[in-house]
Image 1 (cartoon, rainbow, N blue to C red):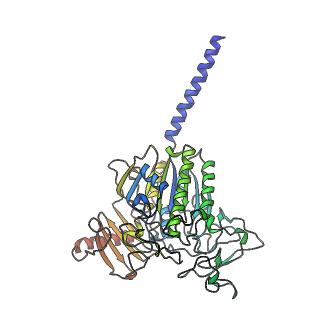
Image 2: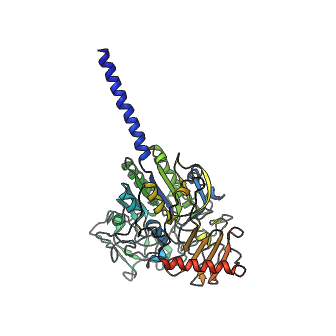
Image 3: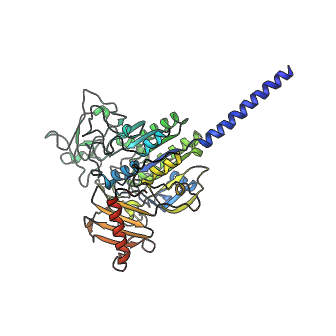
Length: 515
């Protein structure tokens, strides 16, 4: 009996040790989960970990303290649609027509068959989801709001999506879940258009006195939730959401999705709408700062980050999850609504030490907060290496053990070692920046040199230090001595300027920059 008991104990021990060893092997060989949290219109100087003193962002600060905080982290464009296009496809948006700020009825800008970060990771065994703002169009010619909204995210690599289809200052204010408008009543069809549907249709022009947030320019069409928007829509009342609930809903859905997919490698694109206009945060965040709704939206964004990272900690996933925090473009103050962003700005500098912001190619338009955390894998530190959201496709493919087809992700560089804070790792050696759409304005950074090419010969007022004004087509700045781009030195450095002009033109004409 004793011998049999001993044998049984030994057998149990062997299986237990085997299970532990197998679990360790599985943990070591399983590629990391990847969570990309993209803020909207967040500037380099908007976070306390990047020097802001007018508010505190403890959850994002924790990410920075536990991972790599980049001082030369960029998005590829200074407006949302082109940055999101280039992030997902790994290809500069100026290479594809129609990738400017997408209108409400835009068709899908990324067509089925286009390799994306999501499709590459899904091919490598990842579960994939996008939750939040989309703004990359839906449908083949235009969205079928009352039918199947495809192609869309599910046709380019995502297993699940819960979307704000455009951006919240544009109609309609409904969720899209996978291929359909969520909670849509067929008896109350949704119509979206460019023209006023009837003479008595309430708008921000005709019913301005009813608005809870007044418009300053452009945002004066259909009213929903006391806020007038860009564009017109009717119907779909059961499907409409309340602005104040957006972040809560996306956090709730993201947590559920992470919990359901914790046993597989997963990729989550958490696409926040904070702090894009209209800045209508949940009631518990209203008045949280002295900066008005814009500052309150930063605090709400920080809460979202905290809820997601706490979920990873609770599920013991942090040690196998790369979290990337970034923004789709730099800051803007008055972007169509009177929300006291300028009046309550005080000494706060949304773009930090940089000039410009959203809509232009100065550093403030594309140099934004960029943080990576992978507990136990990324040593805490600050990196000056140049990295960009467009590089996440190639870099995440490497981390997932996937290879990129030659015709995929044409401008995405593998900077995974830099993202992971490895010693002597290099970021990219150059970056093309754009403002919006195709054939607009460009910036080229190579080392400390920054060439600006304004094909439009003008720049846009963002409500920051830069005022809308005519500019020379070409300007040159040395970011090492003039990070705020105040002193054009093109006359004194004609040879360098000519080299960069040619390099920029070659990069545009080549159709790709990835070797």
